Image (cartoon, rainbow, N blue to C red; front, top):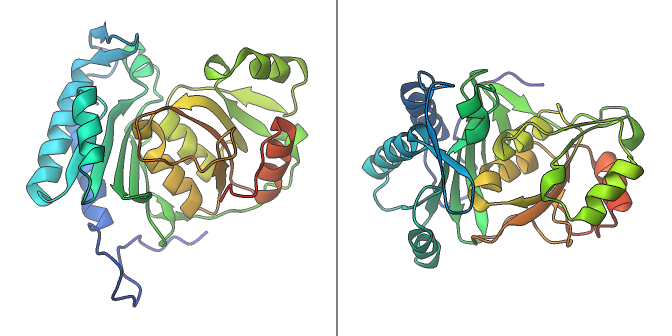
Length: 285
């Protein structure tokens, strides 16, 4: 892999929209997480939202800090955060005649509150029907994954590339969230397991990035929200990976409805995985 420094250099395409300098975006996310998340890890009370999910003081403080930093530098962009009321989220997407930041201030809140060191901050820039920038920061490992559309994906200063793992599906490490799959699908996976071993760690944004980094070979999730997957799906695609929904659609859609995801970095494994799942894969890129 190349170890050259990631930059936001533009190709010679004068028609292309200029997006924020990726290094500035990375620094905003990293500095906010260091200020708001590190010291609170495993030492914070949690509450439950109406949908049963967990929210902590750290989620709210992180969202407020990142939003303030983004709006100070790019006031012309919209903002959608996980901890905003749903009507404000919908308004941010509906009124998007301009790019919109999409933030999950703390993806893996249950892990974070319990002291399990697998959580992240996920920030994506949406422009119409595309994700054009994505940043996912893992404070525990000091790893920041990032991508700009058409310019590749990075983990810190190392470029992520698709390198065939030299295994087939029967030996693959799968990241599968069984809880959010339909019972028939989860039952089949348990009865007729097609992969070598299975993991599920609890941060969707990091899951996508670990697939992009080759740490997981195949991926399956039944229900993830826009702020969970938007940055990660771009990072995987820019690393040369592949993703699709269980219904055979593109994963990204600028909407609040939950989406399923089937993914892999390696094309051959992706095809094997889709075939086993019975997913049409001809539009999965």
